[in-house]
Length: 192
Image (cartoon, rainbow, N blue to C red; front, top):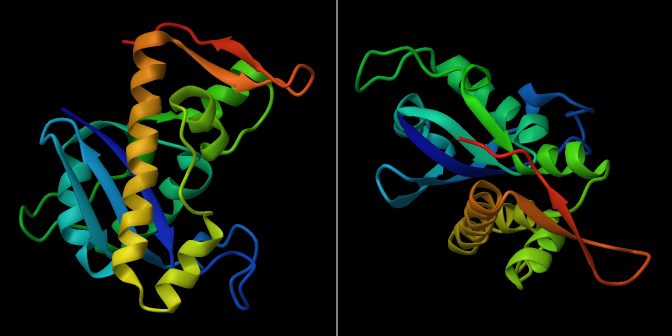
């Protein structure tokens, strides 16, 4: 089975008129970025490419992301539920809640008791920050700047992939330490 690292961007957000808090049905995907370990390739999928994206996810045993359990999985699962079957194969669309999920933000929260942004986590462990802020993604979509949006989403997937490999191989992250201004090592249980 494949392992996928992914990130979604949406056309709207909970704070937009007519959406409302935790109304995942009302959120619309603009782009989904994915890295497949089996394919050794990145893929970028728009809202109209959910059948192809479902094929990638159907072949995955493990899915990885940052805050995926709170946002990405509920949003993407709504699309797969509406799809019902994968046209190319006739197989049922995947249910992401049934996949093994590695949510790196949840891993940090469980080990440290606090939340951290993807940008800060990447800065502490990879020496690089995100190029843009997540709130810009909706503006990029609304302005029709799809190439920039795809590049932004892919960058998030690349950072998440690099952090996942650290989590898997090193079994710890460095987190910012407000008391010292440095970093503190937070260890995780070894994973398969």
